[in-house]
Length: 468
Ligand code: NAD
Image (cartoon, rainbow, N blue to C red; front, top):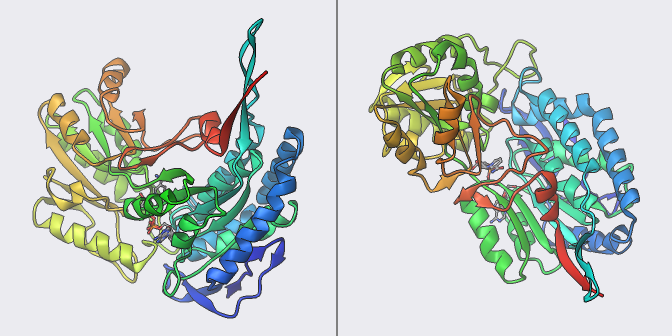
């Protein structure tokens, strides 16, 4: 049983109650996390506010050195963090699972460490000199979901630190343990109070809601569902917080008539089923031209049916269970409805506990719930189309706009279609391949602002223009 204390002001916090964390592969209790309320949150914010005074005046070199030390710490503990993720989140150690997640966290932390935002000279002539400076904001509140608990926490924490802010991070109640441990580890190389963590079960007290309204938090960086992100935005208005909101997606992929079904099958599969489909920018709807529809379905099914699904602690498992009961019930409902409307090509029947096999259903249309809603699980709807204009219209007919993809042997033709997709990232012959050097964010209801690269880093700062 894993039990980690929350770190506030560099010290373990004493909290009188805790809550259970389940292993989604077995349904058994895997650990306990502190169940914190308003008093503990207040202490964490106060610690971050106090630490900001000296942290924000560190030299750029000192901030960079501290971020390098944080990166090294995460790398040193990579195996341990991966095991905690697998036990609480369910994704396998192997494949594109928890080791890969922690590897990504290290890569992002390292890249972010190397970024900087130098002073920009806007004018320098006889009329005067004008400089644009980027100033840290203060206390950043980070609210994370349960799908990539460590990687997303690192996406939030590192740019905040790099730009001279201090942090209070709040993980999902489903996956608090890896974040509690991450914060312990990185506190070994940071001054007290620079990074603090609070955890709670979201029942008697909602920490995320309290953070969004708290006057001493200057920015919220939130990754999670659209419904919750909207609540964050509403309550942040009162105190004029800066916001980065990375919310849900319902990404479309469009397969053009000249694509090679055999060549694209593997990419289509992982574009849709990475982390069991519990990925914001996973492909959640696939539009395939009628001329190659059946060949694409056959190739995809042939690839998908050999993917081993099982307990993530076993090296043979490449996909694990769905992370929690709420999500499992949602996927089950959407698949049951879609089975009655289309043709089931693979999977479709819930397994034991929270296991659900990779499921592919063809013959669906916009308007069917599995196409219109974000399933966030291992079930891919395939929609047949006859005209590319129609496919583009159907792909864009969604309130979301996180990612999208076009699949073709003709890159120029694919680029033309890609440029017309209403989404923040668009890929050709792959899907969801995000990188630390490319800004990532949603359009429409999928969010506000971007993460990663210089553009993402800038969101952790206010501009101050100096006229001399
Ligand atoms: P969720 O919105 O239920 O929870 C996200 C976080 O918000 C959790 O920490 C939760 O405790 C907290 N929270 C709950 N109520 C809150 C409130 N009133 N105010 C503030 N915070 C509150 O999301 P989830 O189910 O954990 O994650 C799945 C969703 O996240 C999917 O929709 C997925 O697409 C999205 N997601 C988006 C991205 C992205 O980068 N765009 C990445 C990963 C996941």
